[in-house]
Length: 248
Length: 332
Image 1 (tube, one colour):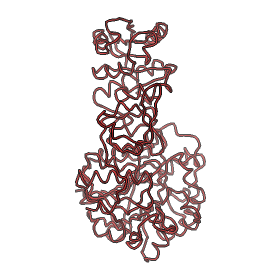
Image 2 (cartoon, chains in turn cyan, green):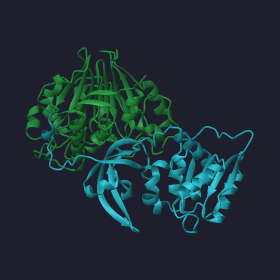
Image 3 (cartoon, chains in turn orange, red):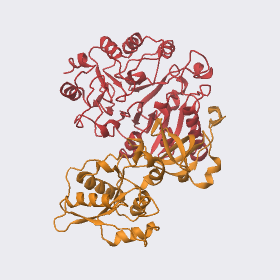
Image 4 (cartoon, one colour):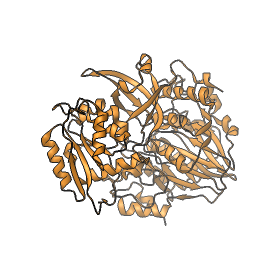
């Protein structure tokens, strides 16, 4: 789960309530989340209802939310089951991030979805919270954490560095091609799983077990679920090279 | 250029990373996993590294090399001994990165880090000496070339000297074989600080850790022994090793970078206030004990932060079963 750097105080607005949009395909869950927001002094919920206008276009949904003049968004990850949208919440949160709207992704399918549909956009999901852990402090801190990053201030857990990635194996889950890799610069003993689709397609023909890549990775992450990878490129193939071949 | 040289031993968790800010350049020994080194370089605004020394190719000493060599920091030279015959993913990772660094960044790679390397490591007032291994050991093919020569036996041992005074010894993962080889050279190892080999674990299978420790500490006679350990990793430090240090140099200050579970099963709830302000991996989860250590080098007047008395106050008030307890009593 996302580790938030605790903020010493919760800053509540003095005059007007800050709006927090709630995106969830489950009407009951939407209602429960909105009740939590209503209990937070200085905040008010804005329920985003299903509409054919934006259910298949993430950018239209972002525009719709932006028009609501919201302070932030709480978004469920699985939006497809009850036909709210034909994309995942992770994609919406990433698009909101690009539009500088702070958002929190929530899910009760953490284990099932982390390595595929969530990892795919993890670089633009600063805050990921299990649904059962949603509470007012997590919401306020999470949105401030996200806002801080949108404004260019990355925490040590989220700042990326370019580093080596070694492919360990390949898998397929539910039709999605996944890669297991070691990122020595983060933790040389832990495998990180991610969708092959985040590696540029032109590199796919070069991928095999043992292939080395360079990528931007947040190597200050404390846990596997915080890891994101982006901007891949091929690293030199070391096999068969002796150090003496490199002498300057 | 800085006027007063500093030696910085980073709290990187399990692993080693030492930074020398010399009067005319910066030198790094080892790059483990994590962001601590890069955060430190950014905080100190260091954009150029004269020499990167790789003591040996164990993961906890080299896993972060790619992060450094892919960054905007300009590394001029990398020195290491070949472990080609050892093979393994970590070594191949290193070769991949070094190939990139040489061909794309113009980094000079020197496939030897032995006593013969010393003269090429000049970066200012503080003299950096490679005390081990010898070039003959490297010429045999390095670690893995002979049954007796493993990566730890071949681990580079680096000494730091200022105005002929022994400031510190960074012992990498030196083991008994390496120490025996070192002693054949009749080198004076006396220094104020010993960065203890193998993170305070036993120095390899079949080695007598207690005897090894007593011998090494007897030779160095350190005032400060640093164990670069990670809380929760391999139960470092081992009690018998700490006891052997104390029995050999009773007035020593023992400083673990992170709080061992052998000293406190319960994690700290607050960040201790004796820690240096520079980054330390343990700061993010309150696992630092001594944290990152910053040594001010001035000939015989070696000083460092965190100071012994502040560290002692922290341990006596917040650590339930400190292994270094008997040594603490002698710190004023």
